[in-house]
Image (cartoon, rainbow, N blue to C red):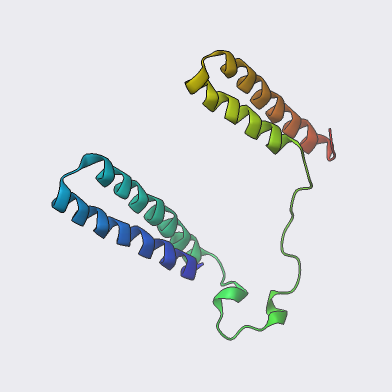
Amino acid sequence: MKNESYVLLFVGFFFGCVGLAYWFLSYEDAGTVMLFGTFLLGTLPGFYYLWWARRMKPRPEDDPNASVEDGAGVIGAFPGSSIWPFVLGFGATFVGLALVFGAWTLGVGLFLAVAALVGVIYESRRGGLV
């Protein structure tokens, strides 16, 4: 995970330097704030990955002398297909549209979001499709 953290830290510090140069050359607030946000979007996960990379055992991807056989075996557990993330996305869309079209879409969005969360909980408890 060190490689990933170094890439994110490079991106973050690059945009931090660009943001500083932008501020001193233009004194424009909105662009400087956006570049500062980009700096944070690179450095925060970069430092988090670097923090985890020091605490976990090295992965086969991190070893330059690793072979394909070193990465064989169980990778992890992945959830099955479900309709509820799609429903939750629709609910979030309607909640966002409430800012544009009015509060009537807020009710629809909240209903869909709550229904999706309840569906995910029931599905995870039963172990199958609801």
